[in-house]
Image (cartoon, rainbow, N blue to C red):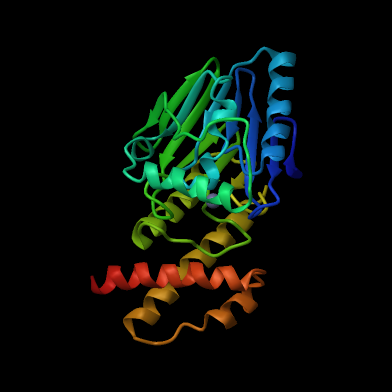
Length: 276
Ligand SMILES: [Zn+2]
């Protein structure tokens, strides 16, 4: 897999599909594996790495899901037998769409004749994130969590040492994909700014595209995301056309064919929000 960030404690491996990131953070007390994903060979590569580090350090492995979108939980059972615990939000655990999320994985695998050496199941969670600034202490390591809905209903942000794991917010390769609520999405964006102002963060890891070590870059992405949501909502209210093709060229996004579909999804959801 492509290494998109590496430092003493953090390794981010990127899938060929949708530039989706799998993150491994090693602290003095544990190995945290986040959203291990996509293709069988890619998951095998992550497995090898994890087994290697387990053997070398004897540290327990914890698995964390930033949210329940199918691409992020697809590798669950390749790791479930190895791990000490599984972390996700209350809304993740109570998600009513579990069957259809798993169906998306099966649909994808069927479509490309993919076989996996592990069964597809919805993650069984052992540590549930309920509140902002909830802390899980493992040895000397503190993991701090925030809820982050908007993109979908059950996201979380996770701060471990000086690494902030964002899930599918502030991805540099895409604009906001809003499956749940544009208002909640805005709140989650503002939460990121608040966190970055109040904690010492050295690396920000987004679910797709390039992680960044720069707070300025994170604030820039946040402003752009808010601007997109504001402009789309404004265009709906004023019944004016939002020129998406122009927008996408302006921002340099590379995949207009599929992105047009995501934008149309956003439009439908936000029209619902405005007019019911
Ligand atoms: Zn994603």
